[in-house]
Length: 329
Image 1 (cartoon, rainbow, N blue to C red):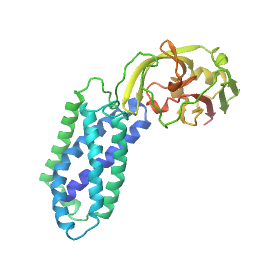
Image 2: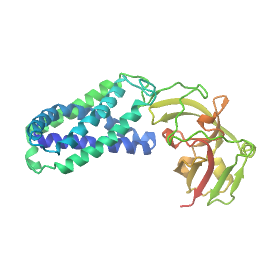
Image 3: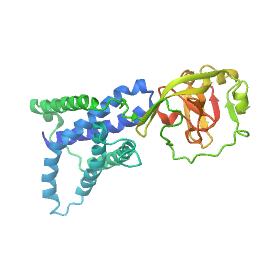
Image 4: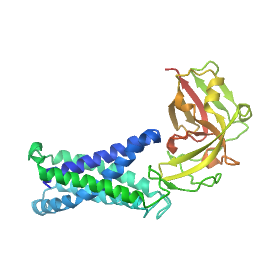
């Protein structure tokens, strides 16, 4: 494959990986499924394209290093980050590493950090070594198109094959960490917050913003609202998932009691400052959980109150909820 075509394939693959990886986190899981699939296909296509890139890079280094061309170091650094980024992604997909092995820190998170660093270096490298020849029109020959098609087919076939390796891996890439076990599931924090010490006697839930009746509710007062229970999957971006039965107060009931508008935007805020916003329609399915299984939610998992949002990734399940702020659209 021509050098410029190979470089363009790699640039598009890296851009696709960053876009699909980050945007998929922000969307409801049902909407993000095509992005997770595209992410895996793009990653395996990138790995296959590296066979051409290796030959190109070897010839380029042989010419430029003897001349003292410093521009090669961006490419060398990109290659150095490519190993942990693509390597860990491939190993994760194949089931060789997981959220709890071989290191205490999730290999999937290391893959993400390396990938973001790689994307920055690739962009800088591409801007410094931008190519204008041959013209794009000349790259659309029959042989190049056949090779591009073969790369795409290889990425799809490899993705389908690797997706059969692990039965407990969800479309998000997360692996099972035990279900219906009460508080016995991994303890992680999206923003690395320390676990706050909260006194249940003095803790209050603030209901603020554009509501008819603002509130300051104790745990006992919150308990007067109807109790709800839901079985929902907590899918953490650290690479694990667990299904549990969550029990608490419906967020929709709380909003109704305080007179929030049907079109309101609802922001749930932790005592640590971590927060996330939801449309009222999505908030209808959420609960403010006090229990997981038959146990009170532990301090590490969000005691005394944790938001549970079925179908959303774990970083939106706010722990240690202290305030529900409503904005009228």
